[in-house]
Length: 125
Image (spheres, rainbow, N blue to C red):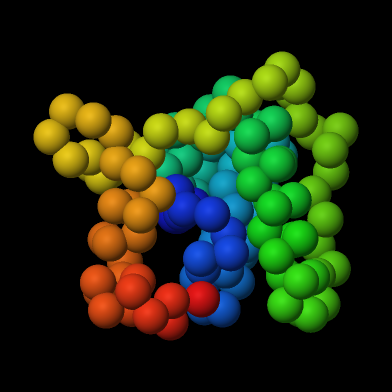
């Protein structure tokens, strides 16, 4: 289970579709199965507990990017299952992506997944 902590426009095709698939699994654990079964105890699942509104918004961002790339999206989430409709930020990752004491920037987080040469050329898109 992994929901990336970078903007969706930076995801390659494989990561975009993979995150979309895993987000649906995470959504089902949190909304339909009461936080039980499957990967319910995985750190990635636990960081989204109580953040279904943010998870729904991440899904919508993925869908928008998929449509921009002309993918055929046919699996909407049921917004009625959002139980915490207050304003929410995306939860912090349980994985360390920090430099010293400051929180990593989006670019620093991207370095975990891409080489410096790819970042400079923009070939990760």
